[in-house]
Length: 99
Image (tube, helix red, strand yellow):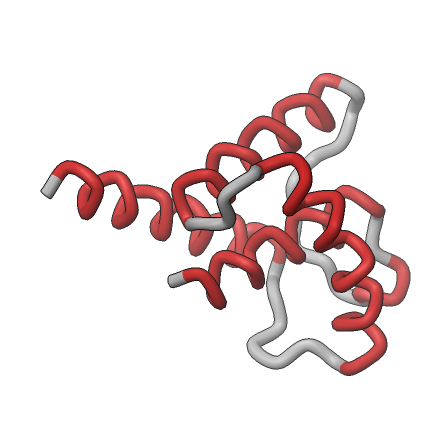
């Protein structure tokens, strides 16, 4: 029961990141290839890939980036998106697969 609540909260957090970033429902193949490059780094950082770990990682990465001046906003052109936005999108898409 407790894990279900944690998972539900984590899923909500990742869904909110997707909305803030303006995540595409079906990313273009070029964007998927770029996000795949982020996958290894994300997997190394979170250990077990599950929505709880991914949501915590996304929040931590975003907090550090915000302290450095990055602001979460919807991305209009993913080909020109900041690294951090693409990285967070990769986390979100990993979360979709882990759900």
